Amino acid sequence: MSTWVRNVRLETGETTYEDGSIKTETSLFHIRVSAEGLIQEIMPASSNVSETNSIDMKGKLALPAFKEMHNHLDKTYLSVGWKACRPVNSLSERLELEAAELEVLSETVMQRASAMIELHLNNGVNHIRTHVNIDPFIKLKNLEGIKNALEDYEQYLTYEIVAFPQHGLLAHEEMPDLLRQALDSGATILGALDPAGIDQDIEKSLQVTMDIAKDCNVDVDMHLHDRGQVGFYTMDKWLDMVNEQNYKGHTAFSHAFGLSKLSSPLQKKFAKKLSEYDVEVMSTVPISLNHQLIPIDILKTEGVKVALGCDGFYDSWSPYFSGDILEKVHNFCQYTGKSSERALRDSLSLITQGVTPLSTEGQQQWPKVGTEASFVFVDASCSAEAIARLPKDRMLMHKGKLYQSKN
Image 1: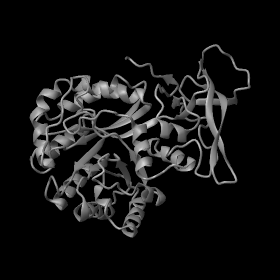
Image 2 (image 1 turned 180 degrees about the horizontal axis):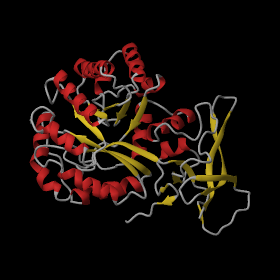
Image 3 (image 1 turned 90 degrees about the horizontal axis):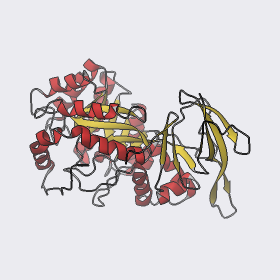
Image 4 (image 1 turned 60 degrees about the vertical axis):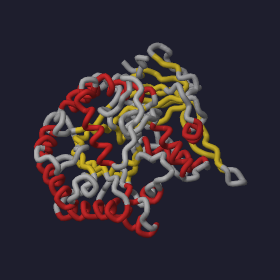
C-alpha cells in the first residue's frame, strides 16, 4: 500500500535580486511513496489527496538523506561512561594505547556501535561506511559485533564495512590473511593505513594491499595521515600502480592530508589525475586549526567525488562527541568563508553523495518520481539555512520508512 507524505517543503528554484543576492524558492507538496519505498507521485499541496495512510510533515523542509562516509563504529566509548583521552607524543603511541584496551572494548562492541548508529539515524544519516579494526590482538571479533549491530537497523540504513588494519599491514605476518578472512566474512571494502608512517615501506605496503584487493575483487579505502611530500608520493605511487595493474575506479583516499600543503597549481594538477582515475576523497574536515584543510573546492571543481564523515567520536582518539554530519558541512563552510546562498546550498553535496535539491544554477533536480523515498525532514526554509543553523529534531525517512528513535 502506498503512503502520502503531505505538506512537504521542497526547493523549487531561486530568485536573483538587483543587488546580486539570491533567495531559494520553495513550495509545499504531497509525495506519494510506494510500499517498496519509491517516489510514485509529487503533487502541489493544493491538490486533494487521501488522508488515510498518510503522514503530515506540516511544512518541514525535505533534504536528501545524509551519508556518513568515514566512521569507526567499533572505537566509540558511547554508552560505557566518560573517559578522557590520554596524551601521546606520536601516532604509534596512540596505537599502542588503543591496542591495550581492544580486548576489553570488544566485549561491548555491539552495544557501543548501536549507540553510535542511533545517534547518526537521529541526525539524518541513512548510509554509513564504517572502518572496523582487523588486527592480531582480537582478530575478527569487532567485525562480528559491528555486523550484528548494523543488521539490527537494516530497515533504516544501508552500510559498507571496511576491513581496516589499524595496527599496520606489515608488522604482523598474519595481517594479510586476517584481512582476506574479514573480506570473506562480511567486510565489503579493503582498508589501508599510512604505508610510510605506519608500515615504513611504501612500495611493499601498497603492493600487498593491491594483491589482496585484486584477489578479493574489492575496492580500497586508504587512510593517509602522512603529510607533505611523503603523503603526496604515497598517493601518486598508488595511482601509478592502479594504472599499471588496471584497477581504476576502485580507490578512495581518506584524510589525504598530503594534499593540504601542495601549491595550488599542483593541487589542481593532481586533482585532475584523481578525477581521471575515479578516486573518491573522504574528508573529516579536522577541527584542529593547526592543520590546513585539504583543497576540497579544487577537488570538486576538477570533478573529484568528495564526501565527509565524522570519523571516530568520543573514543581513545578524541573526547568530543557531536557526531553530526551536517555540522561537518557547517564547519567546512565556516573554515572556507562560505556565506552566500549558493555556496552554502551547494556544500550539501558533501554529505549526500552529490545529490542536491537544486543545481548550481538554481534548477530543481531532486526529488524525482521513480527514485528512492529517503529524506531528512527539518525545520528550515531552505538547505542553506539548514547548513548555517543546524536545525535539531530531524526526522529520517529511509525508503519510505520513518525512523522512530529508541531514546
